[in-house]
Length: 332
Image 1: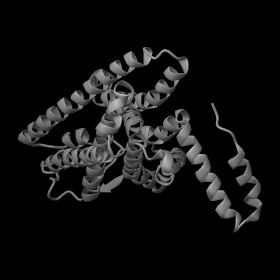
Image 2: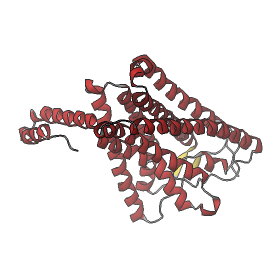
Image 3: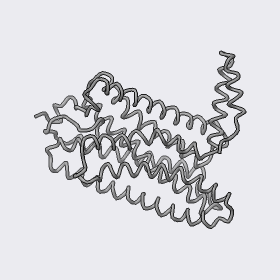
Image 4: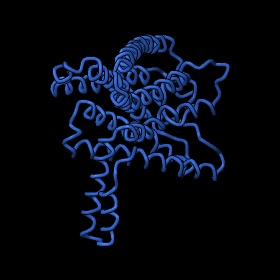
């Protein structure tokens, strides 16, 4: 059997053996990736161009969109390529790079979601200290810490995983490179124990962040329920519910994917769960945030109006479309 020093490529799990279904998966992934690129790209452009969105919440949302784009660009293009051309291979180096960047972006996203929870906690529970605790320098330091933590987390796991000798073939039971699937190919007991130790440490850190998120939202809901006016409670909930929805979707899919009972495990279920935590959240996050953030919707509407007016110089027929977008009122 090949080992890690001589292995040239891995075999990824195909979505289907039928050519029609392979093409269907290609077009489905193409649509999802385009939606993610469009949604996150609009958020990035709106936050960068609109002065009203230069707040700590929107600053972290910008970084969250970057991690979403990174996740989509790490796994989906290779899956689309394999579905289109009917192949299942990925090179050894490509697999290592894919694993590193996926862990990097997923780790940074989780830490950013934790920081965004702290932002909502301070904004609602300690509003008088908001500018002090979340100044521009503090936000920059927290964002840098999230990216650095994701990088360190990814580097340690990737280096340890690909230092293991592999002697159980080269077929991975997943459509992208994933640590549990690579560990199944390992024949090193000590390397497996090292990865288990890293996983336990990472799990403790992730669980600590999760406890912080739960504790923060308990305090947030207590504070919101004490607000006397219905309008004030509605405004407070409208800023928290999108973040809570994103955290719930992200955490629940990852936890269930990796901690589900072996009795219900199957290749099709593993494939579906991997899509849920690696592909679906980056596509839905822009929609979740934009639906409940009126300022963000207004900024995106202005940005689209500006783009249409710019295109009007090249194509005068777009004038009516630009006028209708700019005059459209805010939606409830």
